[in-house]
Image 1 (tube, rainbow, N blue to C red):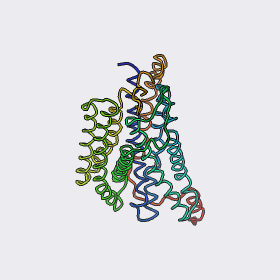
Image 2 (image 1 turned 120 degrees about the vertical axis):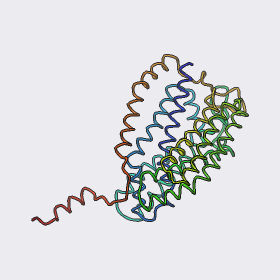
Image 3 (image 1 turned 60 degrees about the vertical axis):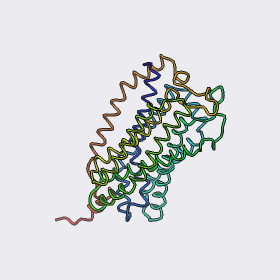
Length: 351
């Protein structure tokens, strides 16, 4: 197996890691308008993902960097063909980052509500567009003989790609709900579990529907055999079915594993259906970008493989340690700001 195939698989793994980790904190943002009853519980939801969301986004940065280094032609064509969609995603991610920071800068119900809604809009919009973009890789976009994008923004929208975007939003929402059952206690945890049970059915329907549809699209548009793409699609369907069963039985830990596998399975199905191409051309299939004609030279692939072998374990250990440190469940206790705590200490009478 050549290094270009290794890097195609590694990029798929990076996207799967991004969907696994960023998926649940996007899901928490999706639930902000419907799950909490008051500002305290809304703050609890932000606190549950506060220490980890920015670390989760590292997987996206690494996936983009790996694509640029290993498949520069793929990277260039995506950023021309999906330019507006990627620009919208970047804008939504920036809004989301700002919402985390500015929501707590100053008290005031209107200000907090504004930035909470901004977080929710970004948490719905970005996953929808990610699903749309990944689905277009296998569904196909218009490419010319130089592998340049020859269509427009509206060519990215079809019934298949729109349903893919909706499926990703649904998967992330139930993934976020199961995550909250692991990070919280008391009445809020019970309501998060109930929300996970309600969301598990639409996530199952959309998730199973989109991976089954991907098998058909990969066969029709990418000349893929049915069996290779059916394997990850079937495993994804099994994971989502188990997610429904486990959420209804109150097995929150295993339910989270099942929803995580569902998110990973979507990416695995897309990449399996895409191989041996990295971007399908439609309607002129001969203009498709393949792993071989989009890859960097052997020397460049060898260098980045050595770099990845050194730094990837360090990244995994560091992120694993972060989750270990912040593993304690949250109960929504009020924590005074340093300024308030200092003022209270000065005001306390001396013995």
